[in-house]
Amino acid sequence: MPSKGRNTSVDSNIRPLPTTYLEPEDVAALFKVPLETVYQWRRKRTGPPGFRVGRHLRYHPDAVAQWVADQSREAA
Figure 1: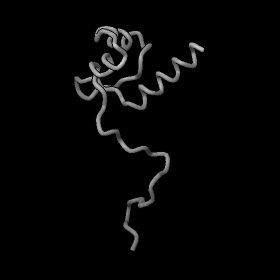
Figure 2 (figure 1 turned 90 degrees about the vertical axis):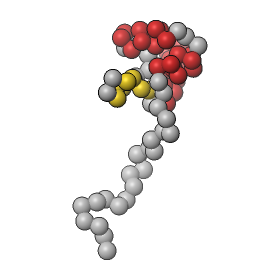
Figure 3 (figure 1 turned 30 degrees about the vertical axis):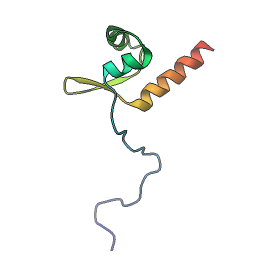
Figure 4 (figure 1 turned 180 degrees about the vertical axis):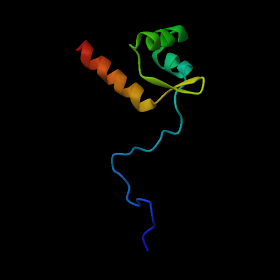
């Protein structure tokens, strides 16, 4: 019997959530830049897109990977 009000099919465009989101310190360590550089990128909107969870800044790993790919294409 189908459930009421729920779509039981899975949308193939929905990706599973990562096991962990990146913190600004993780992004700084990944690119071997000072933490302040990560915050400057955010203020200038030139770095990977981040989002807030309350007061805490987080980065989705896929968004960081996409930003790297975009940077690589622009440099070519």
